[in-house]
Image (cartoon, rainbow, N blue to C red; front, side, top):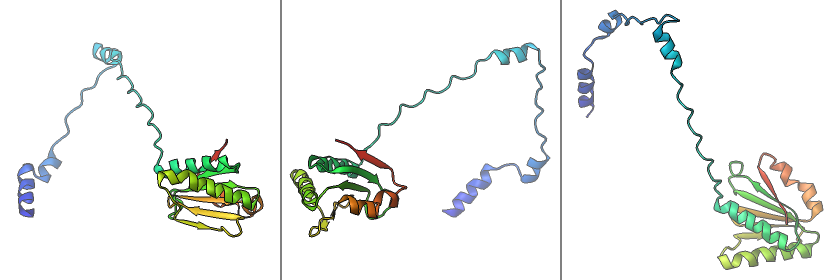
Length: 174
């Protein structure tokens, strides 16, 4: 197969390198200003600018959709300071963090139950839940989304928003 390609290349170029180097470039015609030719070229309108393509609709990934849904479910149980962090490209563990605060351990457990009950009809279950006993920081792993529900003092201490400061964030309000 390689021999055939080489033969085709040899047939395609009929002039040798020395012939190409000896050949003089074609003389360019000069158009003098003020002549009819110069005026006709000046009158030609430039091509109309191309119309801009319509802005693409922002595509929401399934993980982002799940993160927003979880954030809304946390607000149903009066969670506060609810934030969604987009950590795609920054973390290989997950795509989104949902960070919410609950005033007490009882409220944090209620927020967890609200998330589980809200996602159960869709068949979505947490892969892992951590921190159930103390409930000062409860973590729920949904693979694409990791949910952090914390008491305010724990949230201030660990400051995940600053730790993942390069991640775009979205504050979710009621």
